[in-house]
Amino acid sequence: MRKSLRGIAVWSVLWIGTVLAVPAFADCEGMREFTGLLQGIKKGEKGAFVVDNRQGDKVKFLRDATSTVVDESGGAKKKEKWDDLANGDFVAVCWKFTDNPRKAYKVQVKPAPKESGEAAE
Image (cartoon, rainbow, N blue to C red; front, side):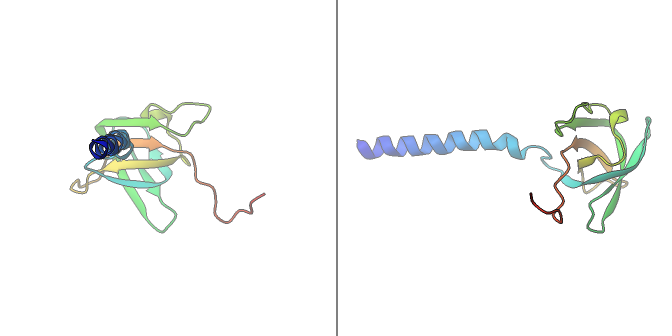
């Protein structure tokens, strides 16, 4: 009896942990993610922009009709529309590998990472 109760308790804890962890990984489900600094943004209906990941890769994305902008940076001014984005924003872009040219389906504005070369105080 004790073993079965312990087994039920373990499986329920594992199940609850799985249910709570799934939304954390659902950001770009079925898509790829490219993260870096936003550069050369063109505003408007047919807007495009380049994302530079500072590792030698620069990728151009086009705005899709279904594109969404999500602000997770915690900054003073929320960026919830395409036209709120600015050069220098740190973003993660969700895109599909099969698209040619690349379309940005979801743009997440994120807090800029700390520079690894800075001295800790």
